Amino acid sequence: MSGSTHRPDETRRAPAREAILAAHNFPGEYTIKAFGPADDEFRVAAVDLAHGVVGPARLVVSERRTRSGDRLCLTLTLHAEQVEEVEEVYARLYSLPAVLLIF
Image (cartoon, rainbow, N blue to C red; front, side):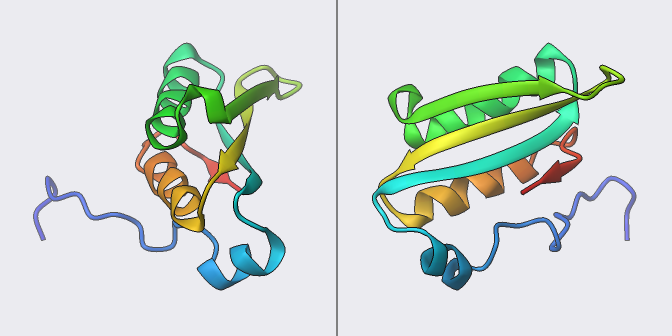
């Protein structure tokens, strides 16, 4: 396999649709936490990706830095109309190379 071929990490994806639906009603709020470097590039990219799915009016963002200050946790609270929006936000966030963890 060529070193220039990028293959998505299949372990990095949204929780199972059944698990999301068992715990959440749609339309409704759904919270995703994304961890990455504490820089503007990560923050702006993650928020822009979520806006691309649900729009700014249906997204509330808060953030917290780690004690060391080098990592950032973005809490994205979506007002999701359907489970597919949640799955799409996860997929887009996992496309960011800087993402360290999402839950």
